[in-house]
Length: 284
Image (cartoon, rainbow, N blue to C red; front, side):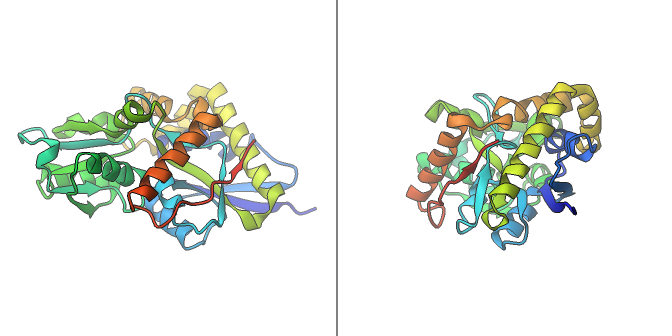
């Protein structure tokens, strides 16, 4: 019998590559479904999902509000901030500027969770600076070149921004944890409901097995992930993977689900998303 093929899309980052090592290496397989993977930056995946073009993909939690209830959330594969880390609002080190002085901010994509958490954090302070959309790789340079007053750094830049001559103004993961005692929801994996329950359950199980395998074979999975580490050291890549591939990645659990619901509820209450989406979870 021919297996049904499902392509799972994710971003070309060290943490995502680490999670998918079990699948891409061919070690994790399913009797009824063939899993392939494809890569694109997270904002492009957000846009593709909003247009309904892909079946299983990583997206930003922010973007999930725009998917018109076509997708369910897989219980594993999520990226969550910690009590002392998350996307970071930075400014040029040589500038004497406070959060209240910011007039323009570079954000790494309109539908990223980093952008939404920034808006929520600033509105708490009565601040609404102009948001300028940049490719995530260009945010640091935009701040250094003073095209903007500040920028939101994601991915490996959360560890290396100091090397660019940037200083921290606000850690959004810490801000959210201090406010809610929950991890900041950033990225999730989703599946189109029209695939049907068997395909969605097979997808979440495959992800769970792949992440479990990578965590159990950390050194070889990390060696594979280094292909996507964008020039950072092995130690930094190991730190970065540790931040975003952990127990909550294996299973969102009640804590992760609660944080996603609260994050989107606050965004809806603030008028920052069009509606509060239906949250259906497919568990491993």
